[in-house]
Amino acid sequence: MNKISWDDFEKVELIVGTIIEVNDFPEAKIPAYKIRVDFGSEIGVKISSARITELYSKEDLLNRKIIGVVNFPPKRIGPFVSEFLCSGFYREDGSVVLAVPDKDVPNGSKLG
Image (cartoon, rainbow, N blue to C red; front, side, top):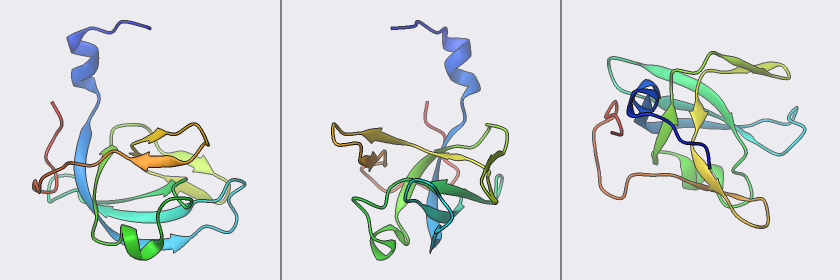
């Protein structure tokens, strides 16, 4: 395991947001959704692709709180540009379980 400093951890902007739109991403090599997430007034709305189709339907995701890394540079995924990383945990079968707050917190709240 690689050790990081507290300063390193503080550089990662892990922010709570609400999924406000979910669309199919048929061009993705690995099944994924295109999601639009409201991260609050300071950060605003950002888009990303998320490989979470195995465990979540579009209806399951709408209005769900998630935790995203919002300070990565944009990343091109085929014809789409992701503006943040949707955080989750890989299971042995390769499916992804979302990392989510277990109680309601305002959009824009930072993990720390």
